[in-house]
Image (cartoon, rainbow, N blue to C red; front, side, top):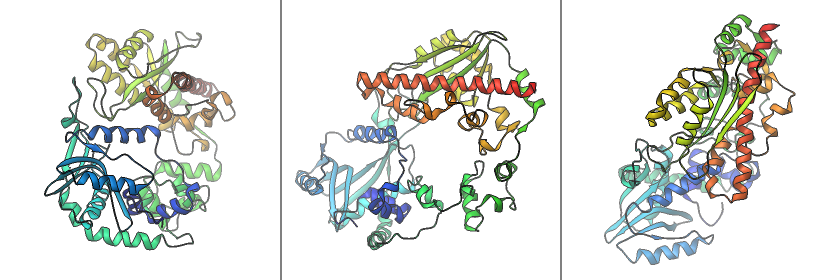
Length: 493
């Protein structure tokens, strides 16, 4: 084990699985990134804002030499009563920085800040570990609390910090965990002394509380077609089958699994011909009419609402793409909208949307519940646009239906009806429709992340990102056009 310190983050990783910590130490190159830039940014943003919660404070700046942070903390602790953020302590090779520490003459209160909207068990482990260190250093811990986001808060005017952030006293729980922490720390240090790679079987710890960054490494010896590749099956069911020694596709065929999972296995195991229910596809297509619009939104989220009428982590639309055909046999045309960074994009987007879509047009979306949710939120916000927005909302139809209901299915869809699987299944050799060929943004998660942090970029970076967003979103609706055309082609055969 690194002789410096076991940190609270390392402790929490070991609570999930000791081997994560061992691999981080000895095989870090085998890890795959699981947290996005935007997620990390959210945590930092909430943490910095929460420092103001208890009033004036002194901050211990991060330094690679942890001993300097510990020494500065000791100096600040002598100035009681005061508030210290990132107060840093070490006991017996165990280190922690307390997000907010209230330093009173008769003891301390510690506050752990999370950008989540609820308290999980791993958060309780996190703060309990901090309490362990402070108690062993001789401090009286009067209170241990977790600060987290109130997702019911709606901003109206100035940000109300006391309403945005919830504080929950978890002192009793933290104190009850002290013996458990002592034993776990001992176990961790012994575990980390192993020079050869420890064995650790797959289990629920691979997915909870976080998806493990070493999943692909730890499952590298499984066959390509294994139970964890089944799309429509719960993780606990996959693990149950795996631990019974049933994980190859050929073995799954003998098990009682739902029909969609069995269908995926059969198609990939026996290379079956595609399902094409032409009558059902034809009925679906007959319900569409001209003018026909193909709509896709991109949204982002804010843990700290920057605009009125926004809740934490509410989906805020910032972009859309529209491909459309005004009449049968008509020309395919395109319109798009992309908001400027750092401003509330909703009003301009809503105004443009009702202008860009002809009244009573048929609108196609892929997984329409998302587009309907976005339009519903806009309609509730802007009374003068409400009627036109509701017309669009009520005229949306879902291009996902033929694939979700298995009117069309082939082995290349790998059990999924996501457009990212359907598209290459229908057009396997078309580079124009390959998201991997895009220059910057390749999926909705990346679009959300890059726009959420766009205002912090340089003008040159912003322009490059904006072009990447436009190209990506345009492909989303163009892909829908191609899928619609393919369905029409199927029923004509």
